[in-house]
Image 1 (tube, rainbow, N blue to C red):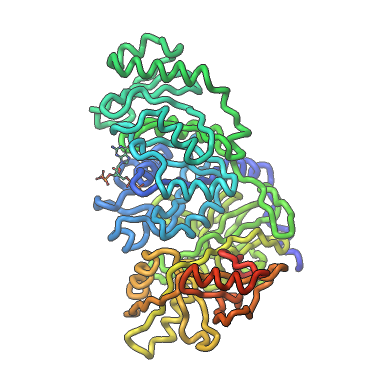
Image 2 (spheres, rainbow, N blue to C red):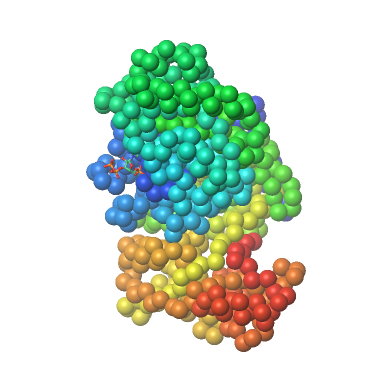
Length: 542
Ligand code: G4P
């Protein structure tokens, strides 16, 4: 492959500083733990919004910042993932929204491929919930450093030592309390910040959050606690502080960066207590852009002159009036300049990145320059699919973003049979977006796709979007399949024929797929074909 734009886009000293100040992270949590509320408060501290209620659109009438789609508003769930950018102190923070609903776990997985750290949000009353655990597992698998924010301290909940014990046991990860709550629920009076040895007291009755009094703190016996805490709370807090102060070694940054220790802060997102302390800690320790490895085992440094990135998300029809489609590129290295030419590795073609946007809260703004760590949305006419890599100097292919085995299957019929073609086109769009997966029965061909989904809600969204975005009135016909596997031989190649009389299907990159009704059939297939691996995930097209 030839060299692209040699004269352009070298990274100078100022650009390097820009790259180094990028922090890209996501919040992972179980629905209702307070992700929207915390996001809103972070944007508030970042000066992006000036009034609370701007992000939240579930019950209020204000514009929805993090949720785009109509259905999300109706359902009160966040399905699509957006990017929010704000400055805090000297950092440029990119916060990637993750869909909270379990049916969109694949989406979340892709978002987590694009961040350097995550904030795990936990409801103090509920502890580690099912969804949190699953998201944690993904982070852990990728060794992503995790901050923990224990939320809703203004409500009754588990005492902090029990909660920390639960996190450690359930997730198998050590916790390091950065702050410690002074009371809980109606007795919640403030926070001790162990890093700067100060205590912060709040007044829960005051509407204007951030109503904080701040004092230096000499240790568990400091008399300041007596002024604010009732007798019982005082005794408990002192016992807890004595214990953690004597038992814990200092914060080990390396262990944190390796994803082995999670620094824990406590607060109330709703009341805006403890959010600034979290942000300050985040500012100090969150890792900036890290090197990314390519399929050829090259490691690309973020400050490289070569602009590189990969598509982790595609969103069609964000603005119905314009019928646009946006490919979200996570920049891995170098500097992005609007209009620059890049090599598109899968197509092995030169492309010009002309229509680019960045997202500052609710507003989509044209972006002329962006850096490693940033996410740019590129207007796309169908060139991009999830997992695609781009680079300005030579062809580079980053590691795969796998797709996972769906468990629900269906076909769509359209009321007006003449619109079958349009339906198929729409299905292809949505599969490129990663919203569904498509399979082909070789006997029928690509006239009628089999649609696979990981969760029920994906189908609901599909039917809704067909109507809303493509004006297609469709009926969903469920199929009896429940298991999909990609059979591979010892060399990792797709196997088209299996012993035992199994029907084979194809995915959209012509890989053989086995669709089966139940696990029992899969066990049968395994028994008949002991040398074959039945993979649950597959790399995307290259
Ligand atoms: P999510 O995005 O993770 O699903 O959670 P979201 O922020 O929507 O919060 C879920 C509910 O929890 C909301 O209540 C929200 O106000 C509440 N909440 C969030 N953080 C805190 C906190 O620190 N303390 C308390 N007490 N509540 C908190 P809701 O009743 O569903 O909505 P709303 O009427 O309060 O807006």
